[in-house]
Length: 217
Image (cartoon, rainbow, N blue to C red; front, side):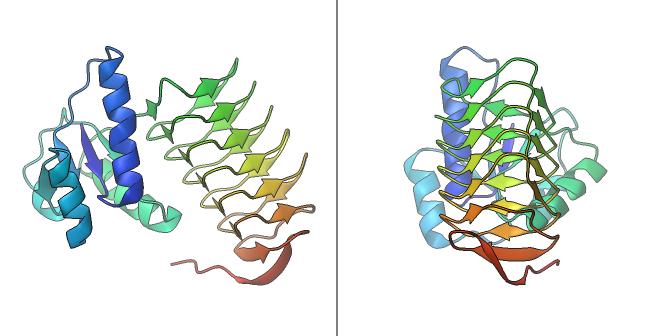
């Protein structure tokens, strides 16, 4: 197993891996890949004894096809590009769910998903490919989160909400019951979404209001 991304969420993903291994899962952490690692991140990896394996391009050129990967990059658009590159190289994405997360009945969880400690996922929830659920986030019943959604720490997605692909929900934000958040939108930290959010919009505040269009690169 390799983790792609050596930043903060990369190290949180390593925590999920460590917890799964401690719980008896047959996993082995080979190390971390990062196209442009910061010195502080490399120092943090070294301190915990995790190998830095180099850049994605370098490693993929000789990668064994039985190695699985998880993309631990917070930005949904970058995560999509990286995941597609690894899939094109013939590698399979792993799904990692911390043992201290709660997953409700009849959940449907896609490949490449990372669920951190303290997350609560209710019944009949759908998580698309490469969704990130950060610590203490809550996903209500019958919610649908499409591919490459990021839910930051403490955010709440209420029941029957639909979150389209590539959305970023900021820390502590709330999306109220039955609403939709359009593709590529960004919901600011602590915002309260009380009406549908248009695709590629940035919304902030209580109640959340649109202030700009999100970048779509």
